[in-house]
Image (cartoon, rainbow over all chains, first blue to last red; front, top):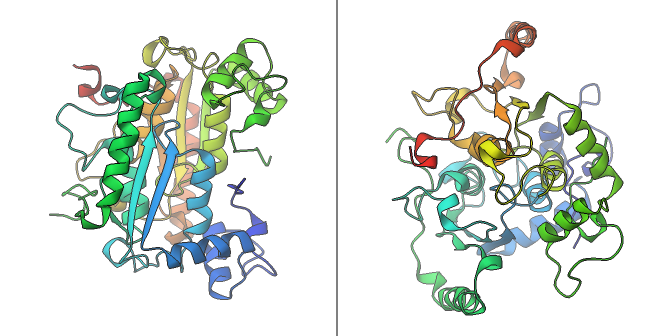
Length: 187
Length: 187
């Protein structure tokens, strides 16, 4: 869909609230409140609002989402819509919704995971699962990671797709994971 | 500069090497080898090639770089230019160069750092420092983090700028940090 990833002045229609010194976060927050965000942002916010579950399907680029999807997060999940201060983590505005990262990687599993890591908490998913999704109030389901399909046999690739297909059938019965480490909230 | 963050077919000039099934990473690698990458990518690669030190200055968006800078990493640091398989981490093609993340945050320090974390290894910087910069061979200098300038007094903001100014004077004498955790390379 060629979504615009850059967070710029054009995301705010009409006058700025502090034109003398442009602060994107502040302006986006103000524009959200007066319904003055760009139409592509509003359209995406409506989709999120209507969803019970959001699945982010992407190829892992540099241990994270590709820029086009990062831009979706930067622009769509603005203050006022997805969270406020206060109003984040378990009180985030998207609470009651589920989110899931489904990703393919270039490298094999050992490049991404510490021996003994559970699927619940992986270092490289921290900014996305803890810092973004949980911050906005989402409950996070275990990530679906298809490692190195490019270097896998046709048989292995079919098996990745089959296990994802199977999982999708009973996704609604799954318990969310603890994507924030226990020390984060002083537990 | 309005850099294009989206990794697309247009990044490759001329014919694709496997048009029947588009794989961005593979095509960018092939295009790098035959000098067929888009001109904006080539221009950035030349700047990186000439640099001894690259400073990434950015406001932290969702515990990471804004999409426009993520897109710079996705498109500029392609296979063949920044790394190969093999040819990554200490053997990455940008070895001999230094990199440093200098960032401002929205929230206060306790939102980003575990009590006891050193500046050397922070969870939220893992995908950038370990997974991207070190992967490409850069030695990484300690991040310069200015926490919550928006909520700081004018005095505190001046002090943040002054300490950064001071540090820049002796940056060349600093030792790189260990941005990869010790378990990663089986130590």
